[in-house]
Length: 66
Image (cartoon, rainbow, N blue to C red; front, side, top):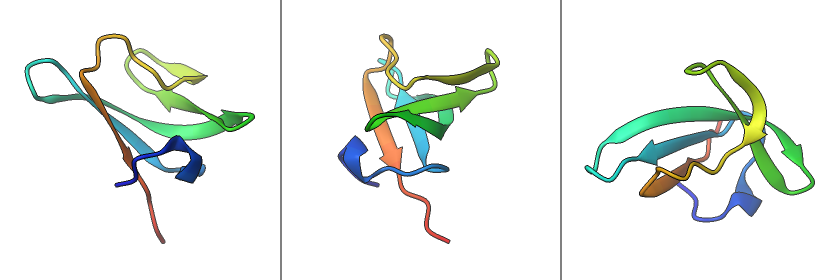
């Protein structure tokens, strides 16, 4: 887990915790607008959208290492 979007790269993951304390949603970083991560997700199907979610109580940035 990293605490800054500046450390994220393509393929890294973002998890969203709701106000009840549960991970409710996840997405993958598929692009950048400058240094701002854009995500793709499946529900609803969206491609290269801003990663921020107004309903999320907390956002976790997960670095993927291969």
